[in-house]
Each structure stands twice: as C-alpha cells, then as structure tokens.
Length: 156
Image (cartoon, rainbow, N blue to C red):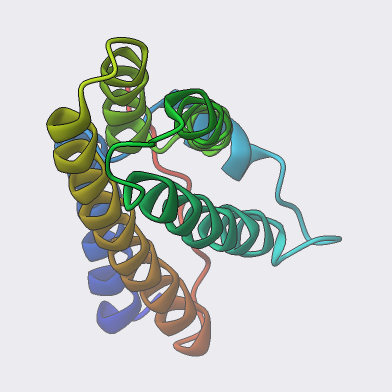
C-alpha cells in the first residue's frame, strides 16, 4: 500500500472518530455502516439521503406551523418533532436526536419562543451533519480512487 493511501486512511479514521467524539454520531451509525456490503455499496448514502430529505420536509412543516403566531398547533409541531427524533435515532444523528428530545418537551409546554429557538438549532445541526457526512463520503471516494480500501473504524 502506498503512502498516499495510508495517509488518506489515517485521515479517514481520525475524521470518523472526531464525529463520534464531538457527539455528531452514535453507535446506531456504526450499525448502519455495518449493513453496507459489496452488494449494496451505496446503502449508507441512500439511507442518509432519505434522512436529510425528511429533515428538509419536517423542518419546513415545523417552521410553517410555528409561523401561525397565536394559533400554533403544538400537537402538529410535536408530531413532526417526534418523527424527526425517530429518523435521527435510526441513522445515529446524536445531536439532532438530542435537540428533538428538548424540542418535544418545549412543544408539550407550549413554549413558543423555546420552540422557535430549538427549530433554528435543529436546522443548523442537521445541515452541519450533512456537510460533515459529505466530507466523510468524499474521503471514502478518495481512498477508493487511490486504490485503497475504506477502513473499518472501531469507535470503542
């Protein structure tokens, strides 16, 4: 193996570890990655694409519902938050999931200002995660194009 591939693999390992250490991902992401194999090489990318499509839709729904000042349907917002929490949990999006737990409590308390703040945080967090995972996929692509194999990363 040449030095360039080894360097890319080390960069990849360190990057993945940093995503866990910074709380962006949890063990569920590891489980998701373990389901990918040669028969479905794009499995993780496809699942994450669906997740991020869901994020766009659900954040948009919540924003529209919260725009109805004075007549906000907190049950509707809460249902969208619950759905996003489930989706984020299933892909290992730890920070998004954590925000959704807080967001759900704010909906139950009918705390409008808190909900608006939390929605802004969720929006920033899922977009940040999307960019970070795109960087991860780009690193994987560089490793393969250089003739290497994307390493399994043990996060424990």
